[in-house]
Length: 262
Length: 280
Image 1 (tube, one colour):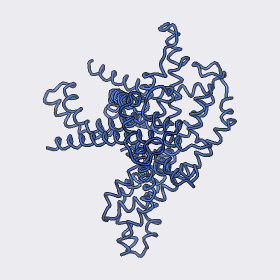
Image 2 (cartoon, rainbow over the protein chains, first blue to last red):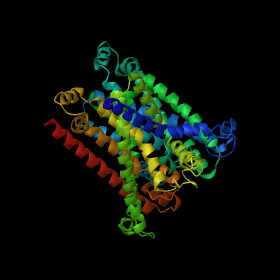
Image 3 (cartoon, rainbow over the protein chains, first blue to last red):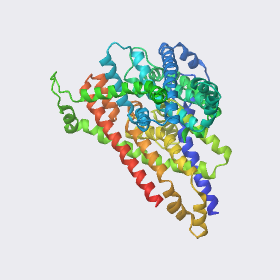
Image 4 (cartoon, rainbow over the protein chains, first blue to last red):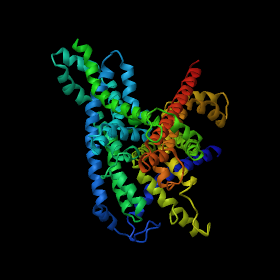
């Protein structure tokens, strides 16, 4: 009797906390179909007008463009820089290896606001650099530690003798990398790419310091929330949630969710 | 020769990228030592200003307080979830909760705070329910104050806390609990004396992550606090961007960086000490 009570109490508590976490998303979903131009709950009727309005709002169009640009360019650069760095860290023993390891992870230890103001001052000092270029650098800094960590984990899980065997049989290092290593850790690389894109796409605080005339999508949403009072942002959120669910699905398939967080 | 240089060639581009951040951080430091009114000499006047001005100081003490409270609440709420999903849930349930957590972890923070506005606002879900059930005559004030910000912070850090705790609970050696049960310990004693101590590394990791995330939070005080709740990130943004006072903004950023560093150092030392004691 007492055991089953304990069990159901724990279950109820878990359910409550999970509901608390999911509720904001559920409410947004409900409000996005509201017929009236208010954010009041419950919705008064069914309408898809706000979804159309998302595409008619100019700042969202600009924001989407800017966010997609930042996410693709910065994750591509981070992969290009992060994969070689991870290879060096896992496959080589060299003087300063530990220091490099710490150095590459450094952005994780810098608070986002501090990172934002630091890159703002850096851009002011360089002076000839455009806003978007600084944002690309900022997003690369934010994403790089995660890329290196994920690639390092994948390389450690792979047998280095396979590369050695290829090279013994006459493959040059680059050949061994592209024909043996990449196919073996391919799914891990795909997972790291999706993760990098998501991290860049959602970054807000540090990005806010470097926004010029072209907001990113989260910044455009933030500005809309602060000035307008209709369900357009709710419709936008629902669309982004769908994209998020897709990202989670892809990562589950490619790297497995548990490996990502442990 | 080539082989010896190889690793350095591989890491060089990444290090070059990181060096831009170091340059930026050193400019923050440089700006923070500037005096007012165009004087060239380095001075500590900005730091002095932060330390002596009551209203600036409040941003720091209040942020630390909010971070501590939200972390504690997240720990209390997160532990049962992490415990349930690892120990009691069926594999299917477990995967479902895990996917939900990750979706939460990856969902947009700004939009999550927007969802909370829809729940806590004047005509939001809670007020509609409370007034509909006759529990309140007029709308309750649930946001643009401390309460709203705390709810936002807790909901922001819960996924991180649960995932950190889940990591240690998954590695628990169940035989230790079984041994305690065989020796006659009641369930609550097993939990307090066996399970909980084994979870301390995860508790420390989750606490560190959550505390830092709350301490540095910007979106929550802006949207759920209406910009009226004093948190450090708001101060830094206001000074650096809205008031164009880069020296003071930089000094505040410098102090925040120091506090974060101290928190990381302190909690990692605590974790190490605990681990050592445990191995003996």
